[in-house]
Length: 371
Ligand SMILES: [Zn+2]
Image (cartoon, rainbow, N blue to C red):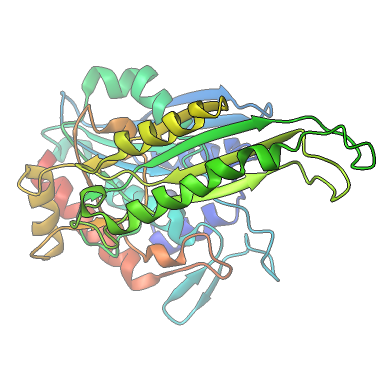
């Protein structure tokens, strides 16, 4: 079946699926489109913290096990700051403009158009299209697919593409995301009483130590990985004292530290160092870490990506994807149309030529890995 990648992108951009809302409506359209193109579709659902229904789709075409999967997400960041309707797609020259056009409804449309163009009778191994919910906020959709999907787990694709925008350069590694939350408790009182204990003063010496950690991450080579640009982990800190007034002492100050772990860096040491310093002051401390993604550039999937794009050398990127949830199950490469610099911006667009090129690249990978 022949689908138009521009029309499909416009259709799904015009159905808002900002992560804090339900993505059920756009998922209905995607499910219906996939079914029309001979895909068997499994719908996975969960209710998020705000009570919104979230849907991920796993679609399969062709018999047998193994094969190849194309992975996308259907949620987007909000479009509130746009001076015009972010969900009314427009075309200007080579650009399709609209929230999610680049990250990543355009790339998603390209995966479906490529998948629609082959008949199941041509496939020696199955072809999968996986579309997750909540990639932009929690990664919950991907985790649910990896853990619960019957199609994904019973027929398990051997190779996959995460279709996030890389300007069609195969990407073999990306950074992860780590967060450490340190909380100091004081006592709130009006300063006229002098009975208060400011959590801000309590946490100040710890903050001075974080300046040193930040400096260490920025200058000590053992905390870097030079396969990435930049090679540093972006160690950052934000503070929240609940908007305390100057005449009141802060009851609680929360210091959130974030950085981007890379393969073979010293992320665990950073977490251990910060935790130890926080505990020294008896502060409450919790940490969580989204792992980086890494696959050897020599693997079949990366080599297939290079062959299909005609590019000689794979690359790395500093942003995260759903790859983390799937990388234990199959060989993955991140490879999609569009420039990530467009993601999350006002006036987000994708180049139409990139969309057409992506369809060709995915068709070629399907041919190599499934036929
Ligand atoms: Zn994305």
